[in-house]
Image 1 (tube, one colour):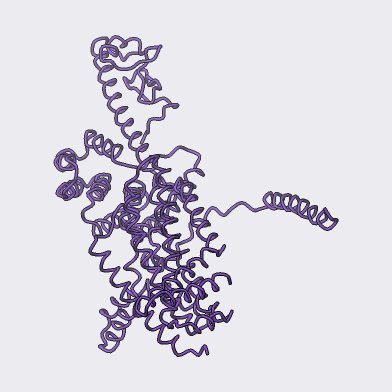
Image 2 (image 1 turned 90 degrees about the vertical axis):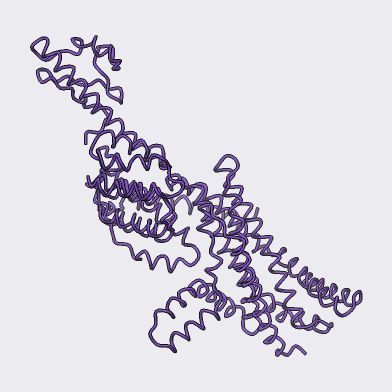
Length: 282
Length: 299
């Protein structure tokens, strides 16, 4: 509750201090900062991060059953846990971002100030992305420490896991955008379910392309081809397995996937703003 | 502390104690596990496993790999005699091929399952071993080790021409070691010789990251050394027989020759095998046999 009061206070302050063009950025930044502050106060978040760090520590012992593959197990288990729990955080925190404001009626106080619906959603989105960034950095450091411990010194894998961590973060940013889109028009439970479905479909969407090319009917080929381009292709961000073998993606590939994520997120947030603008909060 | 807290604490402690006792009693009455239970077929074929693993295929591959190790390990532990990992045909390891196939389909760059497929699997299902290695070569043709493993399988099957071809293809890959080129000619010219076998096991011992494979290679090298020792001893005894008219009845009779050839002997003058156990003299036959306590492989 305190953070919501902070949000309103920060927005009020930003409005008095700045002109219109700068004001929008200030308002988004104020909402983002307070969303981050609110998430950091959430104990569930700490528990999830702690659980990932415990899993990474457990990977050291599980690795002993792998016939000399301890480092691979640590990277696979650590980064997979980072992705899975990151998705949980993105979904369960993401779907509550808007809903909590509506349920506690603080959204009426926020929109009584000159805050746009889009500014509100983008601020909320960036706040959660900042939280996820801190989380993946903490989890990545945990995996690096586990590698240092197992190798009893410097391990080149410590460097090669970070591009994979960046790819995981981009995937989480996409998932968060979907969570926000669904939460802008449906209940938290349904939003969580739909977002989780997107996560699963996103990892299968590459199969749609091969399915489209293997079909005889032109209309079916067009349909599956269109679905492939419409749905997010999250398998682009699966770089955990190559990272465990010490392989990093090329800079061009990281740039392309980054660009894809930015454009896709912009589209999703625009759609979320369109839907959210039609809701009545007066 | 109020009365309710005391009662609840008592229930907590006593309840846990009773639970432990009941669990022990259940364990004592549990029927022995069905030895065939672990041999049930896998639910998922490798391609399905890859599809349903979402972005976690590396982790699932690790799980299948550890499952293969546990599967073989459990069978070895339940076998009374000591068997090297490249002669496990009597253990009925029918799940090993699908487990390794799934692990390598999920993570085609995972080197250890290929090595395991080359070393352990041929004794169980040589066709499956060749299929897994060929699949690996198709997926990552730049991995020279896969050619080495497939060459090893062909060499074991005494198909020296195919083994030589594999080493040739592997030696053409940039970054492959020099000895791969040397193996091409060696396989073609003297594939069945002890020298070739020694070279293969030495490379396996040097290159493998798996302690069990290193141990197997070391035991095979000791076996080759012991075969060489016994050839020398047989020759010495035959020469003795030519000179004296009969085979030696004790090792002491040829001790000076053994010492001059720097063959290690024990206090009684008996030559020692690579595991430091004295060879047994087969009196009247001019033959040296391994002692029953020797750990040198017999097959």
